[in-house]
Image 1 (spheres, rainbow, N blue to C red):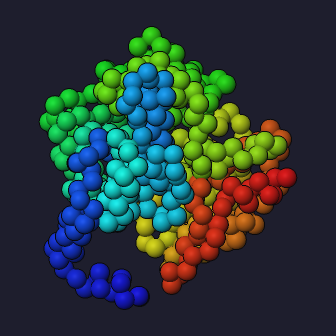
Image 2: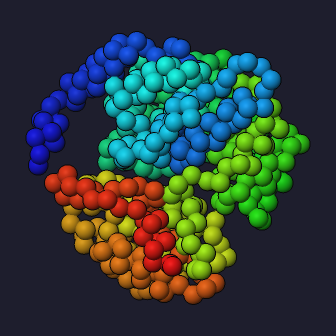
Length: 414
């Protein structure tokens, strides 16, 4: 155990809590409380945060480009995929959707200096738990959905949900909520000046109708047809969340339509990396995410590569992931995925335990991807899940090695 982990283990929780809070305040003071000079939109939930951040950013930027006014919509944003300040963007290499307190305030300060007027931030439960959202002046809070994740870290699903709710208690102006999620009632109950719901199934202020999944995704909102050059029912919800935010700030549906039509997806989110056979890389790492990823490729027969993160993270989900793969995949390859200090074989065996008889256990992830593509027939789809566009794999003793599922799959499929 390294010194940092040991210190964390022996330090009382209340002292850790005050430590995180103090650093959040220090970061805000050091950078001059930059969020006060921005309209800040925070996006939280289990799935869809990065894509929703991307969609909101696109729409706000499109609203400027089609406007005759002198006001310029420049956006600063963070997500598990990338950071963006106006036209400058760079890859997120830190494996955290919401990095530390000084980082967040520095990013917002860079946005202010670049002339940005909006900030769109991915807000994670771990970030909230460690007060990374503190002293950020949120104008809008967005709830995408909620399914079990990070249960070991938070202690229970209820605690996990309560961390997400804290973003809404810290945001007094606009709340944007997925009405179709069974946890919506907890978020709706938190008062705000304006609460706006979106969805497909239940009553909502912004609703997708006539949803069709052919040649991408098409649906109508308020009589305007929206088209996405993407796949997956979940992307309807991501788009609805972004449209709802945009409408709250007076952006027309026509501008939303134009911006979303240009979206070709974000790296590692149901990203097609080869066509013959069809090879898709996705970040899905929770049971619900995996299920939705598999369903989005039906009726194609699936050859599936999956694993589960180590370091004691969400051990409960490992056999669940294997069980889902058994239900959807004709061939299953269970492999290594960020084992940290755990034995990769133990993790693989836990996932494979419920994956049925037709499972291949291959520790080397590159070899696993090669095996999947070799097994696939022309009519099949190979789907590689768990890491998405992540650029490193985390091994024992803090070691990291360069990694890219997408590039490996491209090289193999040539």
